[in-house]
Length: 217
Image (cartoon, rainbow, N blue to C red; front, side, top):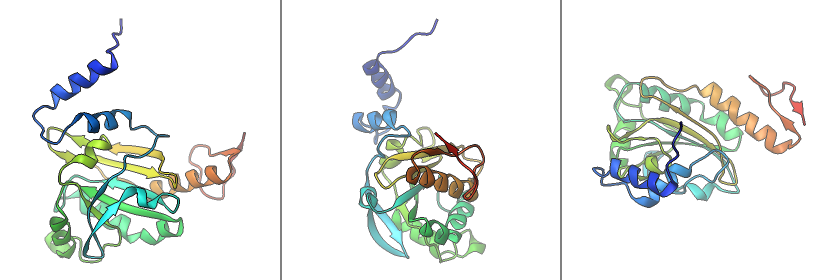
């Protein structure tokens, strides 16, 4: 027989389980529990590196204006992570044509991001020309809010979220640490989201690509 834990009891258990982590609080945990596709994305304002300059990024500033692809990655100066950041950067123009901003986030500082960007590819860096902003989540509050933080390692899993112009999460995936994501699939999903929002009486079947037939409802 399945036993259901009352909502408040679940939160208490979750709080106790993570009591060793300084950055957890009730508000963040509640946000993480309620993060669902179809719900508003948790807002944040954080330090970031854009065009090798320090700045601030506020997620809600894109509302009414742009879609957002928000991708979390574990750490700068690692192995799979540079391949993902470079791949998103190399195809940044394709996302821009779809009125979409692409933002990377890790638990590194903005200073580590800048050093990583300015380090050569041969030395494990990004090679200097990264088009997508990199956000610092040094306190781990953003990864916690999006429910992608590995509490034992203190780093983010490879979470990816597509957020529409109303600030609603339309798509969410989480990869484990050892394997990267597909930019092709991210673009395909983004195009499907945009198509169904423009054509409200249509839905996209499996493996739908732009230009293919949809299903009328």
